[in-house]
Amino acid sequence: MPRLKHLLFQAAAVVIGLVLALVLVEIALRIARWPGPPLLSGRLETRHHSPPSRPDFRDRGSPLREEKPAGVFRIVVVGDSFAWGAGVLPQDAYPDRMGDELQRRARRAASSPAFEVVNFSRPGWNTTQELGALARWFDRLAPDLLVLGYCLNDAEPHQRRELARLRRDVHPRQPETAVERVLYARSAVFRLVFHRADNVRMRRATAAYYHRFYVDGQPTWEATRSALAEMRDLAASRGAPFVLVVFPIFDSQLDHRYRYHALHETVTAAAAELGIDAVDLLPRYLGIDARRLALDPFLDAHPSELAHRIAAMAILEELEQRALLPEGEPSEESGVEGTVQAFE
Image (cartoon, rainbow, N blue to C red; front, side, top):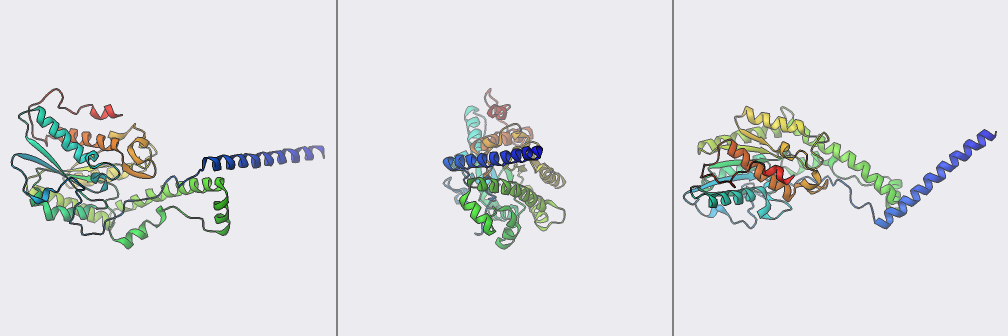
């Protein structure tokens, strides 16, 4: 009997301790006004529903209003919100940084040609929409080199209803039962646990969402491959090299926790089968804290200003290694070797 009383006393002490700990945590969370919004919003890029033939040049000025100047080596970068520069200033987007760097080199080397990088992009475009816009304006653009910035969600459909159906599980869950609603309204501890659990669920759902597009025979992936082949042929018909640049998703640390390694391999393998030069930027970001690379860490996976800088210099380095840029008089400062490492 004394032993039973001792065990009951210990159990009661544990329960009281847990209750007191929860009360203290509740008080601390209320003082700190935490938690706020979910740690992962589940936001994916909104597909644009206006005519796909209209790029958005922001305040850069449109190159479509006049012919390309004589003697200019023009690089056209086609892309979606990554290239457009969502969340950063226009001049910080990686195509604009590429143009600035090339112009600096041209000024340092008198024999270098004049360079121009056209940011031909619009938030929400997928690859088939990019092809439609490019085909319409290709002759006016007259690129000497075509670069496609590819994001792993570019194999999505753009139809509103289909997207809503596919994205149903990647959005934050709301309290559903009466008990959940009461606890959510009155307990900061419950809200914290609720958001943490939903964050795990959304991460898994988002990874599954992306992976479903890259299954052989999946219609949107087949349409994407066809669009890539048509871009290749369009560029070749005008004598312009075509390079595909694959971006990572900045929604997690880019190490063993990154869920999309296989998708990078799928895209680059498809490019190889189509005879398209491909640059995978994932290795360029390894070892860098993802909180420095995302626009809003784990909430908005668009690249930060730092991620744009790294992309710009990495792409230029790859173009140089492939001898796709016209050679000018080299100078001691003209190379980009080691520039990416300097940002880390």
